[in-house]
Image (tube, rainbow, N blue to C red; front, side):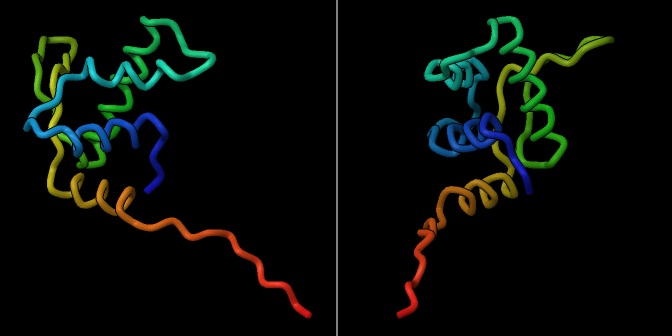
Length: 103
């Protein structure tokens, strides 16, 4: 399953957070270390789309308000499948690209 950097950041932070539900304001810190960060209004749209895509994949559950036209997600929670996927992503040891020399 392909995930973007922001989606990996969202999954990792929700797994590391001890609370059951995580507020979406935490994920704006992702852009603090970036050299060319998008504007604040665009950031919220990007984060919302990433959260909605993770919900569609079955990795997250969103909590919020639903109006007639729009869905407002305030908090998220990992599903059991999301916990498993996150542990697989960040729990595995990375292999080094070693090359053997032939003599």
